[in-house]
Structures are given as structure tokens and as C-alpha cells.
Image 1 (cartoon, rainbow, N blue to C red):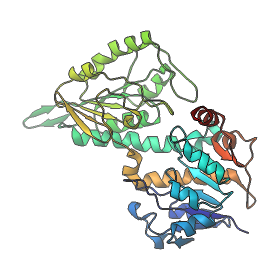
Image 2 (cartoon, rainbow, N blue to C red):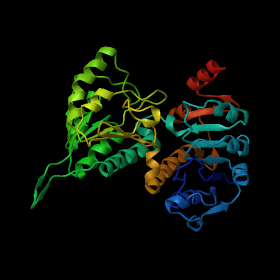
Image 3 (cartoon, rainbow, N blue to C red):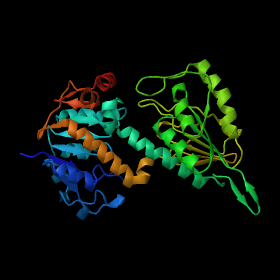
Image 4 (cartoon, rainbow, N blue to C red):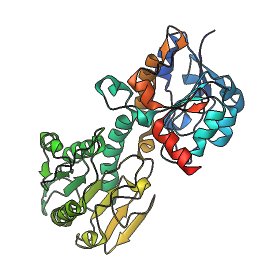
Length: 376
């Protein structure tokens, strides 16, 4: 019997993305996989039900989830959706594995094999499945556009009959995937750009995009492409040097986030107060508490003339392309998971093993299992 793949309509407030786009559905159909889409799932990104020519449109959430051998989601399922999932089926999506751990107890009780896209290891073989990177690239691009809308200045230098307008200065803090895309976008808009990261290894990447690297002479490379936590002495050194660059910037975009941990506080209130009036901070780490002390989630704070914006779910703001990239990440993961028309959960495979949270009626992921046992 052919594998049934199901895609529910996202229920998170403000979410515009959908797990599968029509092109990817067509590619799955060619592999003799049966795709079911909940009615209206893609309408917010411009896909009508009729665009899913090779999928069955299902109106009831319970009917949809009850038949799915594999369910694909963007956001973690609600308790109601978990109850509707087919026992012993597979769930794949962003599952926010570092919070609301009780969700995984419920998935375990339903014998669900749950894969978190956030936990896919950042190895070369998994690049096509790296949904964190695909969505971070979108967030970095959009953050610059958000800043340009808030800032009361041009980004590029302009020569006019009334005089010359100087280019804006943009500082990007945190030069991962989002930061690099933010640098590239700000440069394309004509700004003077600086990039800062505690990982000194990214200096060449920053300079290759035409930006200047802010070097505080600290090397803090960690595991998995993330930075390690700084010591107290290193934090003081960071603050002293970075404060000068923050004060000189018209726009500061912060992207420093560590999965499962609060966002590192990099910009203090005193640093904000040293900025010129009219300057802007866009804090992409707002959902983790923010890289700026004054950040408030999904709000704009005005402090002594400086605007601090803490947007949430930024990739969803570019829902069409965000969905397209995410769907391709899922497609690549499915090609690893499905072997000759059957679901093959190979625990010897590093990608499968690292991203699997619940399986065979138990918590498979060691760190999450320890957290749950500690909480209980």
C-alpha cells in the first residue's frame, strides 16, 4: 500500500508558511507517494487548493491526520492535532525541542516517530535538509528591509541638487547564515556595513561580502557551527570594543541565538543610549529574550530616540519563498527516510538518529529524555 503523506493547515497565529508547495507535491507523486493537503493550507502564500493537482484535498483535520503515515508540519502540532495523528505514524517539522517538553510525552504515548528539523546535524551530507539555514537566510534578508522601513534615512549615498546624502552605517551582530545574508542585503542597498561575531573564523566571509569585520580578538568557536558562551572577562572586552561600533551605527541588526538557551545579551541599555537619535535596532533573537536588554517580543520600543524592534517568526513574512525552501528541505529528508516505497528509520544513520526525538513508544533523543526525567 502506498505511503500517505499529510500536510495540515498551520494554526499558529500569524503563520503564513505551508509544509509542501505544489512543485514538491508533484515530485513526490512521481515516486508513487499519496499526498493529502488540508483545504486552504497554502492560500496565505498564494497557492489555491486547485494548484495542488497531484494531491487530495481534505477538509477535516481529523480525517487528514488520521490517515497520514507521514505528517509534515511547519510548527509543532497542538495537543488536539497530536490526538488526531495516526498511531505509529511519522511526524516531521519544526518541533521546538527545547520547550514544552510535555508534547513529546504525548507523542511517545501515540507511538509517533517524531523528527525535529532543528536537530538535523550541520554536516555536508545534510545541507539540502538544513531547514534552520534556509529559514535563517530569509530572516537575515527581511531584517534589513524591516530596518530600512523603520529608519528615517536612505541606505545608499545619494548626490542631489540640494547636496549629498551620506550612506547609512549598518552593523550586523552575529555572522551565521542570517547575519551573512543581512550583510549582503545591506551592501546591495548601498550601506556601509560592519559585521561582528565572536567566531573569528568568519572574518573572511564578512570581508568577501564587502563588509568590515569588527575584531575583538576573542576566539569563541563552539560545536555545530555555534559560538561557545563567553567568560565574564571576555564579555567585558566584547562590550568595551563593540560599544564604539554600536554608537556609530545607524542600524544594528542582531542575530545571535543559541538553540535551547536564552539569547546572549550583547547590547546594554547604556550602549543604546550612546546611539544617535533616529537609529534602529532589529533584534532577530527576540524570541529567545533578545540580544538587546530593551527588546520586547513583537514590539517596537522607543528609548531616547532609538527604536528597538523585536520581530517574531520573520521567515513567515516571506511565506512564499520560505515555504518553497522548506518544502525542498523536507523532500530531501523524505528521500533519506523512504526506501523503495517503505519508511525506513535507520538508527545507524547520523541524520536520522540525531533528529529523532520519539520512537517506538519511548523518548529516543538523549538530551530531551534527560530533561523530561529531570522535570518529572
